[in-house]
Image (cartoon, rainbow, N blue to C red):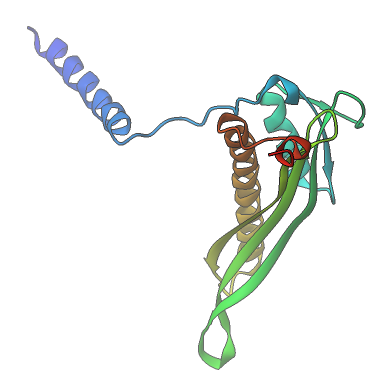
Length: 182
């Protein structure tokens, strides 16, 4: 075997090692949520605007759902009455300077089926991220908060989709009328 062939084989094996390590640790790429046929048409009723409704709508579409502009007969409704950010100070530096913050994100949602029956009662999800504040770089701090909020929006969308999928998969999404007869 020539030196060049041996070198290429060695380089290829170096690329294979990280891939095997990721597979061994259980790492998997995120997949789109699988929702039941009854939820293939959903109207989003999200209070407020911004990035979150767009991200949620896009994620639903990637999962094969048609997001409808208006509710109506044969259309499920995903209602999000609360989607709010908050900030808390965590630690103070000298001379009462705040050096660390926590950004909190709370979202409440529920889901009704196309017939108007409550499938998932009001759910509360709260997420947070902490960051250090640099008083000498206020532009960087605003950018950091914006990136944290973007990341929290992404994680919140995934959490909602996973709850929708889990409710369907584990039979938790039962119409309220059916649940009350037992």
